[in-house]
Length: 190
Image 1 (cartoon, helix red, strand yellow):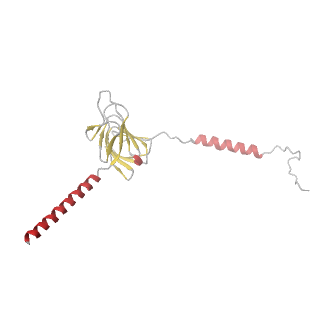
Image 2 (spheres, rainbow, N blue to C red):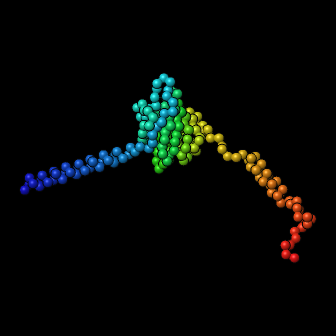
Image 3 (cartoon, rainbow, N blue to C red):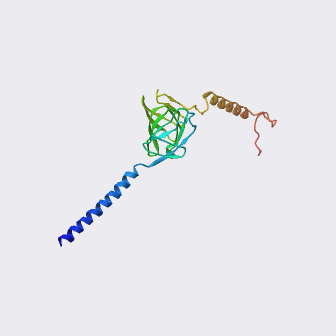
C-alpha cells in the first residue's frame, strides 16, 4: 500500500514538473518576437558587413526586439518594422532596436539614422532623447535632428492663389451689360 502511494506521488510530481518545464519554455520563447527584417543598401568596399548581435547578416534577415545592429563604413541598412515604420541606418552606426505597440523607441549610440516612414518615433542618443517624424534624421554624436524639407505650399504661394481668386471673382461680378438695358435687369413678366 505504501509503495503504491509513493509511486502515485512520484508520478504526479514528475508530470507536474514536465508541464511546468514545457510552459516555462513557451513563455520564455514568446519574449523574443520578430519585429521586422533588415535590408542592406550598399556593400562595404572592404568586405565588412552589417552585424546583428555580433553576427554578420545579409538582406532579408529577421530581426527581433532588443537586437543590437552595427553598420560598417560604407554600408547602409534599412529596417522594415511593419506598422512601426521603416528606419534607415547610415554608415558606422550602432543601434539597439526596441519596438512596442507598433512604435519604435530605440537607442542610437553612434552614427546616423533616418525615419523613412511610419509613426513618430523616439531615439535615445548619447546627448539625450530625440523624437522625430517620418523623413527626419538624427546624428548620434551631436543629437542634431535634420528636419525633412517641408513639402507644403509657402505663404507667398497662398497669397498669390487668394489674390488671383479675388481678381477673378471681381472680374466675373462686374458685368458688361450685354442686354442693352443700361445695366438694369428687366422682369421677364410685365
